[in-house]
Image 1 (tube, one colour):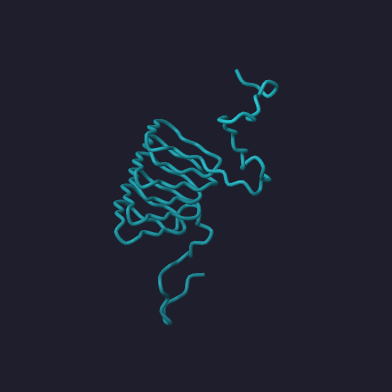
Image 2 (cartoon, rainbow, N blue to C red; image 1 turned 90 degrees about the vertical axis):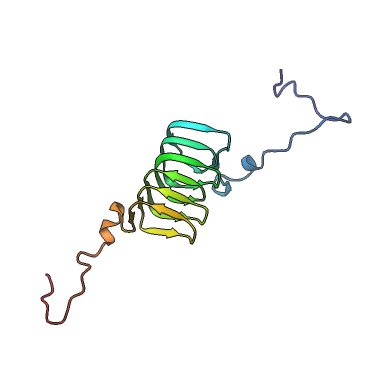
Length: 158
């Protein structure tokens, strides 16, 4: 069993020294924290994170990373509703995607569900089957009250 008091120093040839943890040596504000769900991972339920997350595996249920970035990798298969700050989709998402800032569906991305965000980008070659709402609930404060064009002789609403 290993502990700090009995740790063996690698002075002898053939022993390897563990690399120091770079993340812990940096101040908190300089660390880049990203969680990762690998290709072989199958997750069922509610996935929540308070840090940026990249998913390359399968998720069924809901994904909530409200104040963070979610990246759906090219091999990912997601059957979940997603809520995040920004969402970048390279793989397949079956479910609704709601972002407080931006949804970006890349060329290899495929979405079957509604996209809701103030900024939505769909690359050439991407597939989206669902409603696209670039205003979203969260952007109601910036939504114009009347989007119709007013003609000079038409009365302007007060």
